Every structure is written in structure tokens, then in C-alpha cells.
Amino acid sequence: MPGVSTGSAGQPQNDDLPGSPEWPDANWQQPSPRLRLVRRVQLLLTTIPVLLVTVAGGAVAGGVAPAVIVGIVVVVACGVADFFLGRRVRAWGYAERDDDLLVRRGVMFRRLSVIPYGRMQFVDVTAGPIERSFGLATVRMHTAAAASDARVPGLPAAEAARLRDQLTSLGEARAAGL
Amino acid sequence: MTQPIGVPGPDTGAAPPPPPGPPTGPALDAAPTITGWHRLHPLSPIVRVAPALGAVLLVLAENLNSRNQGHHQTTALIEAAILVLLLVRGYVSWLVTRWQIEDGVLRIESGLLRRTSRRFPPEQLQAVDTVRPLVARIFGLAEVRVRMAASSGRSGRLSYLQEPAAEAVRARLLALAHGVAEHTPPPPERVLLSIDTGRLIASILLSGLGIILEMVIVALVALAVVDPAALGAALSGGATALIGLGTTVFRRLNSDYQLTVAEAPDGLRLRSGLLQTTAETIPRGRVQGVRMIEPLLWRPLGWCRLVVDVAGKQRSGHENRSVGQTLRAVLPVGDRAQAAWLLDRILPGVPTDLHPPPRRARWKSPLRYHYLSWGGDGTYAVTTSGRVRRVTDWVPLAKVQSIRRVEGPVQRRLRLATMHLDTAGRSIHAILRDRDRAECARLVAELPAVCRAARLAATASR
Image (cartoon, rainbow over all chains, first blue to last red; front, side, top):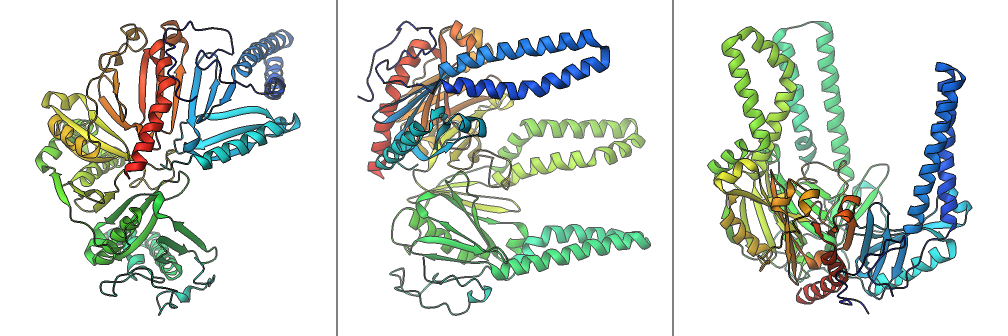
């Protein structure tokens, strides 16, 4: 039930990645594992031009050795970024409760948002070209507050449509205005 | 909404309007009745162009004065031509703009080639202002501004109407927003306080911008004493910056000058202005948050400033500055007792016992720590923050849109977290910084239900 006053004070923080000590029973769901691939493709698409430009720059400026060094640096940075992106993908999670949607994300900066359905203004489903080619979409719930951060990326298209319809109908049922 | 069947032509305006179905209001046709389509006042284009007109006249006068030849006159001619074009454009836009209040909804249609028709449903209405710039005051005109909640929507403007008509429109829109009969006369008001001009000027002189302006002036005077020749150079170099600074300070003075706060059953009424006067009404229950600011230099005098926030556009940048970003001061300067009293009129019964964060929060927020605290009950949340400029925010829980907990890496090491209670206001949100992790876990579990209860209670009492 909503508003469970789980006196979870001092509950040991479990530092494993999908770590949200509140509402362990809340039926947490995660984005599709394919989101990992989407992020990887996006990373590659930004890295390759950077790699080309820096290697070319290094070659022009100082010959082969600098070019190789610069290239290695960029590739290593890409690998590190990929590692962190993987952790962030695994940290995403959402749960639909009776009266609100929970969204958690982030590893370094852990965020947990609680958005009551009654506050929903509209829901949109977006899919960029890369996301779309993997059959994924991002669902975003908008409230009147710009800071509310209710975004769930990497949902399979069918799940995205289900979540959108579910949120819309719940939002209508519990609409509360401003 | 289908009465005037898409007649796009501009001519259907002020002429005898087609009899619109059943008359909308029960009132007799006594006062300036407002049914059917209306035009704005015919002088509006002139009032709108007036500031540019002033500038051009200045340039013209200067040119005549220096009796220069050739290309100076052409620039003057070009400017005059631009002015005429602006006037023509303003006149055309006046011709094709019309408005009406029908079925309780304000509609404004405008545009010559691309007709736009905008509706302003009263339930989303956040505030109604009447604004009178200096030139409009000379002609006895006023602008009505309607501020809406929709974060994407621009505010609606009726510029300009005759003053009595503007007042009538405002009263009617507010009546609609409260769901009472449309032609209810505006309820009587009770003046809560008005601002002493001397203290206002002193407070502006002691504010950050005021101090900068004073330092600049002192420097200029010193320069004039030491080396009068250099003064001219300095003035001609920094003239624009100086004028900009002066205008900003003056704008502050203008917007808070002789502010009168009055309480009426339809909301809080604020009237102020030196050259451009503004009358605002914030309907009951639309206040998203109240903030008290105590700048460093005001603290020895025990002064503070109280501002209110209503729902509106949050991503700033492209809206008219005078409407948008600055929060409305209900108490430009006053002592804490006045602020507390006024706050009690706006948000009655706010909690007063505040809890500081755990001592280890000093490692994360060494400066802020001394004034960090929060307090809350079933209706409000209070947060305080700031070291140099102390800020206290009050947010009704009924207005909370979403609840967030953010835990940064440093905070995690210190077992701390920050809670955000987001509202639809432009900048006032309750931010509970650096709370104990266990407290946050309890809050994040309990606050959603508390906010929901507050929301239900608020809707029930409305």
C-alpha cells in the first residue's frame, strides 16, 4: 500500500548496483539490456570522429609516435566511459505503485524520484534513431515542475506503449491540477 | 466556441457583433458590458511605439542641433522610416487583433497572415495584472496581462484598453477563476501594508547592485577631483555600462515603489510603481511558495524581503523580462515581525520549529551549514539556507509536484542525502540539504502520503 511508513531508518544501505533500500517489495523493473548496446553505439559514434581528428592532428603535428599515443589515450578513455555507462544503465529502475511512479538512477549521484500520478501533465514517448533501431523508446512523464525527473530510457516499444497508457489512465483518474 | 464561424477577416471586430446565443452573464447591460468581439484601444499602436519614438526624436533633435550634413540626415530619415513602419505594423496588428470573453473563456485572436487564436481557460489562470507604462498613463490606458500555468504558454496580453475597461476585464477574469458568477462586482479589499519610500530607497542603496552603483559614483567623483580630464574619458567609455546599471537599479525602485499589499476575498492584490504602475492580483491558493531573503548588509538593521512565487514558465530566457523571471516582492523591505505577519496572511500557520542537519554536514557544506535547517508539518515545509544571503523558503505540501532524493559521492561517504520537493513555481522549491540518510529514507517513504493528504485537504477546502 502507498504511504507505508516503513520505519526503515538505519536500514543497511546495500551498495550493490540496483540498490534502493526503500520499497524492496515495490516490483522494481529495469530498462531492457539492449539499452547497454544503445549506449555503446552512441559512445562509439562520438568516439570515432574524435579519434580520427586527434590522431590526424597528432600525425600532422608530431609524426607517428604522438598519433599512436593520442589514439591509445582516446581508446582507453572510451573504454573507461563504457564501463561507467554500463554501471549507469544497470542503475536505472522504475516501479509503478498505487499512487505514484518511482524512478531511480545514477551511480555516483544516486537519484530517486517519487512522482504522484495525480501530478502528471502529459506523457511522451520518444525514440532517437539509435534507440529505434534497437526497438527501444524513452518514456517521460511531465509534471508542472520542470525539475521533476521522471524519465525511463531503453524500454522495449511494447512496454513503453503499455507504460504510457497506464500512466495516462492513472493520471486521468487521479488528476489534481495545480 | 463556434459562434463566429471562422470569419478570418478583420472586419468582424468592433462593429455590432452578431447576437451571441444566450447572453452569458445574468447582469443587466449597465456597466461596460463585455460580450462579443472587441478591439483594443485605437491609440495602442502609438503607445507601444512611444519609447522608440522618443529615441528617434532625440536623435533627430541632436542632428538638427549639430546642423550636420548629408549622411547624418539620411540616418535620421532611415530611423524615421523605421518608426513609420513600426507604426503601420502596429496599426495593422491592432486592426486584426480582437478579443472576447465568452463561456467564461478569454480568447484573443491576432495575426494578419497567420491567424492565431488563443484561449485562456480560467482554471489555469495564475495571476491577472494591469500594467500602465508611463505613456499609457498619459492616455488613460492600461494593459491586462493574464499569466497562465502552462509551462509552454506565453502570457496573454491585452494592450491596451481604457483603464475602466481594463479593471472590468480583470475583475471578470478573477471572478471566473474563482468560479463565481461572471459579473460579480470585485469584492472589497483590506490593505495589509504599504511600503515606506525612505526605507525602500535605503534598502536599495544597501543591496548588491546599489553598492556597486555607489562605488562607481564615488570613484567618478574622486576622479573628477583628481583629474577632471580623465573623467570625460571614463564617462564616455563606461557610459553604456553605467546607464545599464542605473536602469536596473531604477527598475527595482520602480517595481517596488509605494507597494501596497491588500487582501481581498479573490486574492492578494499588489499595487506599485513610480513611472510604470502595476496592479497584480494573485488568486487565492495559487501561491506556490514564499521566500524570505536577508542579504548581508540588511541583517544589522534586521531587514528582510519577502517574495512569492506562482506557477509559470521555468526555463527562463525568452519571455518578456518584466513579467517573467523576477519573483514578486510582497514586502520589498521590512523587519522580521512584518514579514512573519504577512507570511501568516499568505500561508497561515507555518511551522516554526526547525531541525538542523547532523554536524557532519559541515564537511560537505562548510559555509552553508550554520543556517541549514528544515522543518515541516502536515501542511508546509520550511527550509533555510545561505551564509552571506540567508534564504528561507516556505512551500505548501499541497503544491508539491514530485519528491526527489539525491545522494552525491561526498554525501554518501558522510551518510547524508538531499531531498527536493519540487513545485510548479518558477524558482522556489523546498530543498532539504544534507540530511541524515536514515531521516531521508523515512521522509521519502512518508512524504508522498503526507503530500497527497495535504493536496486532498486543499482541494476539499477550495
